[in-house]
Length: 561
Image (cartoon, rainbow, N blue to C red; front, side, top):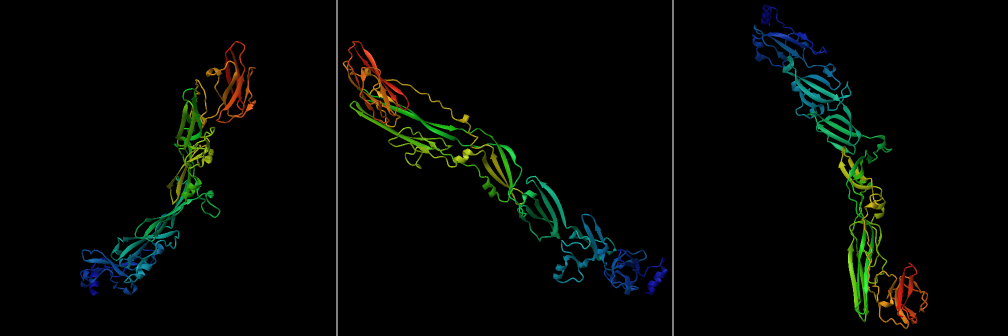
């Protein structure tokens, strides 16, 4: 000591061997001081001290907690300054920085006392570090700025004389929740987005209808919990607050191509036959066709409305708006006909069995041609119906289909946002009641034919439509005309009762005035004619009249003079 005093006396200015104090913080107990030592003295050699040594100089009893933290470079005459500091007291009271986005509290901490652990983690550490500086749990509110919560530690060097033992720990606090709102055009609702700090690797994402929780990585201290939630309108909710699914969004107009089925309106039968009999063997021929009347749908594309729904259950929307479906089918029907005649001139037979198919189409109940009494076989649709049926049953669902004013052309489903589904229903603004216009019918023209020929002994074939027929039609078309008078038989076929009349006095008949008809068997009408004594050929007639239709046929007698 005497040597130091001697050196101190020799140095100008005199060295500071007693503590020189400084107060780096508002807390006066956080005093920093320095003293000067001469490095030439053996006890001041660098091998005799270490950072962290307690202060042992004059007045050491007044600084029991101060430690050596820094030794300055020596002067040319080997003098150096030694700085001593103690742990800071109540640093959280004054050592912070605050902005609207972040609160930072800074602490001067012994490097050996910091492990970035919470108090709970530090208590479990082995070995235990006495006096360890611990951090708050992520999400803990600040004691002063309560809207801010702890997020992370940032470790920095002091860049001062304290750097040998101390570090600066900055504890950053952020707003507990950051809330933003964004309009979502897809679901046409506002989305509330909440950003919250949570301890790292402690939570996972989740979701429900209309809400989604996402965990975004932050750092080793914290993650970010992002909650997105639909802000439903008042009309979207039930009285109990639950969402009134499905929510209908704005509809969109468009044009849609769609294949409406062919419409079958009716089936009609047209035919012709001819028969001839004389001294030669008889001959018979016939042919016919079915007129299948169909209607093409009006051509597309069609005006449509694309209805959009937001829902948690797409199947419920599909059930509420089922796609318009009707099954087309090519109907099958057939015809069997036969006819036979036997006479001295020869035998004549005719038989027919044909099957026909209509184009694939939809239709109401259709009555097949039934104006012929089919003795053998019949006209029917297919094996699903009883033989002899003369009606095609309506396509299943035809009444609803043809009566509809619109058509559900399709239902599409896709994932939307926040666990929800968007269902698009394509509704064509036309349906079975409007898409089939009369001018779309197939245009057909039936041109009646005419024929001529010598007819005798005619017998209508079984299965034909009976008309008023007489055979023969005139006496001079066959041999055996007796000039002297006699009887003549005229075969008459009529679909209903018929009458006869004559204005010639020399022609008479004992037949009743009205004779029943409606049979395939001819009625043998017998007339009598008187002898011609005039010497001049004469012509007389008998007129037969169908009582239902008024149709007439005339039998003519030519009698030589």
